Image (cartoon, rainbow, N blue to C red; front, side):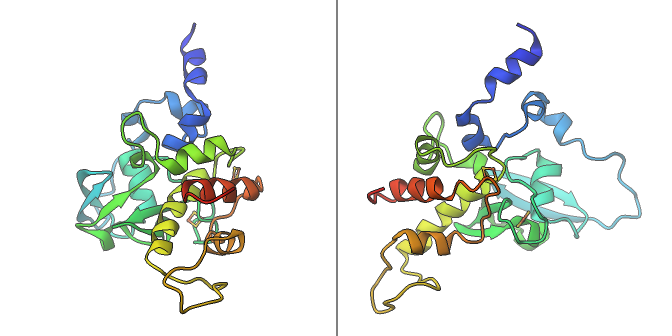
Length: 216
Ligand code: FES
Ligand code: FES
């Protein structure tokens, strides 16, 4: 077996939901190579120091203050599970959790989150145990190419937490209830910021319902 064969075998459907890996080449590159960045820093570029706790680990980064959180994750820490789809807040592929709340990481600067705790797709599993949403996405075939999947799963984690707190959505009928019932319409509305170009929506909804303990 050559190196190429080994990398191809390592990329499974579990790999996609656990790490957001969608490209065989990236799976085989050492993390140091991924984090190496575009080259020597320009000494005239402004720099700011930010401390982020990412997936339980503290990182102190020296960044151009204009660096988005998404670029800090991908380009400076080699956490490439969070994807850059549109870079304009329109697709949700970059969704991560900040102190448990979902956010489009392409629309926020890393320096705005100094001292905060960030969870990416790489931080959801506990050892060998996948997060229930990751398991459900595999069981319900909630993805095809996998490009949107990291964002879908992180968004669903945040969405279910919002729902448990009783936050209503645009389609919630009865605002007097402590929490809206999570039917298909509620889930679709609450997940509407996450686009899937493969149109795996029925399977995504089914996966979320399973993870929420609802009948699918
Ligand atoms: S890459 Fe952030 S919303 Fe599309
Ligand atoms: S699985 Fe391909 S974009 Fe969603």
